[in-house]
Image (cartoon, rainbow, N blue to C red; front, top):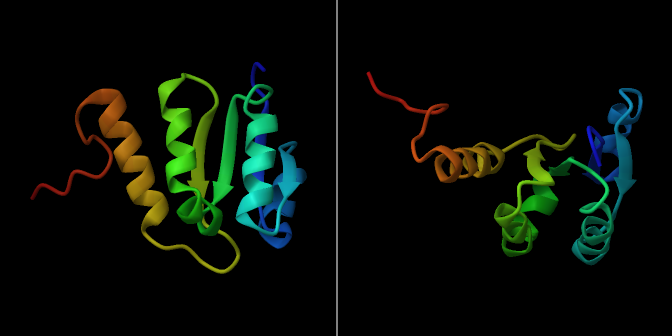
Length: 107
């Protein structure tokens, strides 16, 4: 599992990652994404998931919070991003560190 990365999402959004050596898993719906994530979880250290899928898989993705690996991160897709990925990362950092170090908007 050491150092292996994968991305799960719609085909257009993930193909650029293939050129960077990231294993790509194109999926068209939530059901297929769950299957792929179950299979890849034991083999990959980092798994990226496109925002659209991540939104629909919210509760399912929480199961990965309990173990150190794989680290599951949300990325925007070709259809654009929202604040969901940012909120997902913020929540993960707060759980891990107990404090918001990335997005603290103090003035």
